[in-house]
Length: 129
Image (cartoon, rainbow, N blue to C red):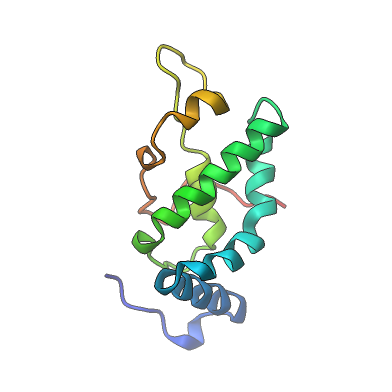
C-alpha cells in the first residue's frame, strides 16, 4: 500500500474527494455522493461512443456498478476519481467475432468483472470539460 501524502500536499478539493472515497470504501451507501459528483462526466464520455441514449444510459450504469463492486481495490494516488471511472468506461468489451465495441444488449451478458480495475495513475483518459 502506498503511503498517504501529507495533508499539506493535498488541495481541499482533493482531500474532500479522498475522504468521500474512503467513506464509501467503509460504507458502500456513501458511494452515492461519488456518483452524483461524476455521473455527468461519465455519461458524456459514454454517450459519445454509444449508439443511442438507451445504450449510453445502460453503459453508464455498468461503469458505476463496476466501480462500486471494485471500490475496495481503488487506491488513492492523487488523481481525480473520475479518471478511474473513465478508464473503466473506456475499457472495450467487444462482442464475439466482432471488432466493434459491444452493444448494450450483448455487453450486459458479459460479466462486469471482466474489466480490470485500473492500477496506474497514467492512462488514456483525459478530462472532459
